[in-house]
Length: 416
Ligand SMILES: Cc1cc2nc3c(=O)[nH]c(=O)nc-3n(C[C@H](O)[C@H](O)[C@H](O)COP(=O)(O)OP(=O)(O)OC[C@H]3O[C@@H](n4cnc5c(N)ncnc54)[C@H](O)[C@@H]3O)c2cc1C
Image (cartoon, rainbow, N blue to C red):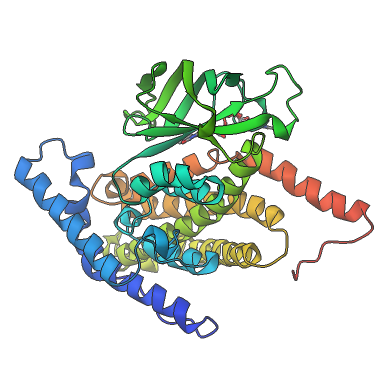
């Protein structure tokens, strides 16, 4: 089924145009070719000609996206992007994400896209020339290396990877894991402690992001850590006496924590919009199936259990979508969005998990097969509940912000 995207009367003409042209590409170019586009990931017996055809198809779609002026929505035009505002991009994402993998065909590939944004904001002219330009032109790959096996990622200020100044160099020692895209990366943005590693963990100013080219001696990729029982490119890496020039620090010394929070904050909203798009797809699949599958003398759609699935999923999607849009609007205003970002980071992946779970149930065995995108979605939704900050940490943040407001003598203003 095609994604049903019509203009939203309360939105600007520009956002409606973006959603509409994105939906046109998703519906006409991507959905009908979905199995062929990404077959190399699941089908090990593809011939060279199958692979070439799929590659050509992907390149043709990318060309159509560029022609439609929708390429790299997260980047300004001077870096080859279409320069969308945060809200425009967020609205585009819910449409894009309807088709699994579509973001890559629109020039948004994590973690490169997050690294591009960070380089754009914190990079010097020299760093932009050396790393950002090739990254935006697709001539380089990158990774973001923060989480460590021996420290809790949910408290990023506890990292132990140390960068010590030695003349005009940083010398980095540390152990990271879950560095996504690690094997393909030409450079890593490594979160390092640039102060005493035994200093109190709550010091934000102790962290600096440093650019490390992957061919620097001492960058030792140990393995891709298997995820959900499959091999992956989320790498375990040891940085052993890695020496890079001091000019590879990204932003001022001590700005690493702030930059990471900024990156993750925006990323969480985009992830939630993506989740809404995927829920939308799972919902369409579930309803469609219920209309044709006959069991025990009647179509599934006539069974009240299944009607309950449909109604509950509708409520989950509406709630998730409206909360996410509200947060995206705050990102563009002067209102502090942090409490809402934490709220959607908890609610949306959980709602996404519920919706996909019901869709899988309705489809039966086919639901967990590789013939449908539901199984992948289910794993992705579950992972989101811990990546980018686990639920518990976000609950603590929400309560902290709310209590602070009440202690200051004001109640919570749910209207703003
Ligand atoms: C697929 C995938 C890709 C990733 N990609 C990257 C990447 O590219 N770069 C990178 O640096 N990292 C990456 N990560 C790592 C991710 O950001 C961390 O896994 C996440 O921040 C959680 O850290 P942790 O795994 O160390 O869990 P821990 O910090 O050990 O937390 C474990 C659990 O403890 C509980 N918990 C934590 N704090 C509290 C508390 N205060 N109260 C009660 N319970 C609590 C939560 O349930 C949490 O899930 C990725 C992870 C995954 C799964």
